[in-house]
Image (cartoon, rainbow, N blue to C red; front, side, top):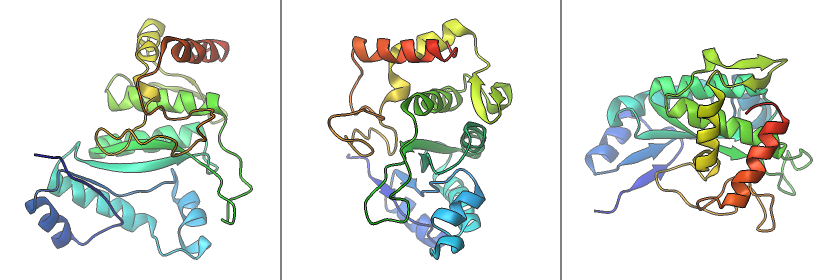
Length: 218
């Protein structure tokens, strides 16, 4: 059997049930923004978009009721104007709901409303990737992490454990639908690489370790 995953906008309850009965393994409903305000600015009413925050969240909740925890995912984009604290809080909410939150870095595209916005700093994206990995793995929770002026400054986990997770390289690989290894979704082939589509090599892991050590995070 080949696992089948679907990424879609909110569907009706009967449609979701029909997909599950037809053999769909996992379903993804993107939220993209970490707060309702940003959602409205980027893809909701403020942006003259067709999407609604409550409808997206309700759809995720219904999907979990049908498919079960761990078989529903959403996409979150880092760099839309949220703070670390807002992003990590929403990641925790999704995990508690039974939804897997996959991270992507904002990428400006010419001709779009946000073409002038810069990508998030790589060091910031790395610490949010690590926070997501720790929360999804039930190693840490939002409530135990430390923030200063909205910035993540501590994971609430012993340093040795954090270093062990960093050295695995796993937090920094592409996340999304199960076994996703799509390359260059939010970066150019020449780098810098935000989501690695393969296991990291020792040099890449060492570079991340140095960066986090300089930030005082490990």
